[in-house]
Length: 207
Length: 207
DNA sequence: TAGATTGTTAATCGATTAACAATC
DNA sequence: TAGATTGTTAATCGATTAACAATC
Image (cartoon, rainbow over all chains, first blue to last red; front, side, top):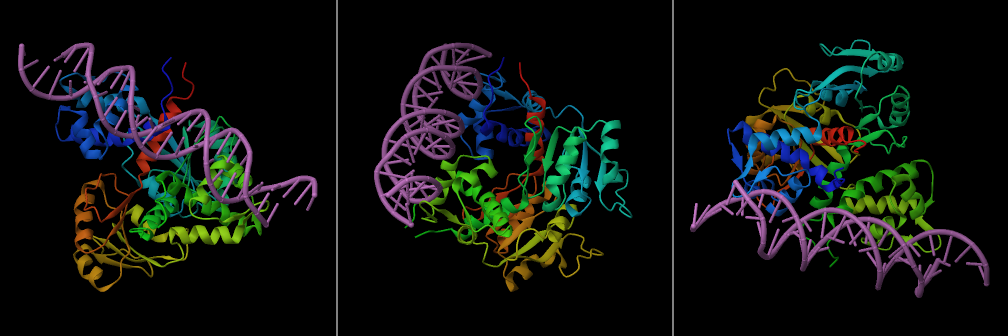
């Protein structure tokens, strides 16, 4: 039905959502593409193009209704639906994700798995042994598995998670995961981000 | 001297570095653009283009020397130079970054700042009160400040860090920072990454 | 109405891929 | 040498920006 939307646009959606949510929180009721563009340091033309690829959310001569725009953006990304997450790896990063409050209401971490779960207390969140992973996934809905293990373990863990039936992986480990085509993988890498900063630091004023 | 390199290429450098480092660790001595491309799921043409924008690192008919390529990539990003980092915010994320071992030898976290540092123990890393930030930055070299505060505090904290003379910011807070043009900011957002995954989950097989 | 701002087409710009001569 | 693979140009593709008619 709708034509497929380019990856470049998809990557901007969360930023739009954040900015529009902020405006909503401030009590703004309408906003123009020009204002959004200023905040985000992009062109107004791009803002309109991007929104247009999903539908007609604005009103000529007026702008965009902030609440409607926020809701539409949430809808596009599915943020209104509930998402059950499990985390593999109860190290620093795994615990930081488990404790993070900023994802929004729809996201719930239901369990954390580790090879040595003994003595780890994460309050309401169950901490289980890796050996219980497949059984757990068979008995509970798991929308997203977060891989927060060391790089060496990631490939093996990803395979286990896929074997347990999970179709969506959020990968914090610094490894290229080779998985079946029907499994979605989104990588997030602290090192990569830091190295990009380093590049720009070290190549500030060429010549 | 050298023409400026496109942002698209810069973002791929850390992945190249990781893959080539992995091959080096495996004892490989040479590698072709075709093999790198297969591992990373890109085209060999792109790999050669990217490397060529920095110089002639390969040898026709042979390929690339793994050790040389790894060293060149590290050089381009400045990973061989030491980098002193401070972290603002000793919450889950700040502590996870402080404890992360995967950045490489050149990166050292020298201090963590928090509005309530009492009782937080990070081993060798000093945990100081925010009020000591400016004084600390005056007396110690600080290459990178990591912002790991809640979103609400980020803008204020960023201003303080810049005021203290730091020129490079690695921002984990979900906020658009408006800072002077000579300050480099690299954003990394867990929510944005998760939301992109969500989008693809919720728009799997249209039509 | 007059002014403002969207939605959308067309033009520009940049990034990716294909192709192949150079050369090891 | 013959085979392989880079370095690099040219062609294609995709993403961004400019411009303006539509319309509130």
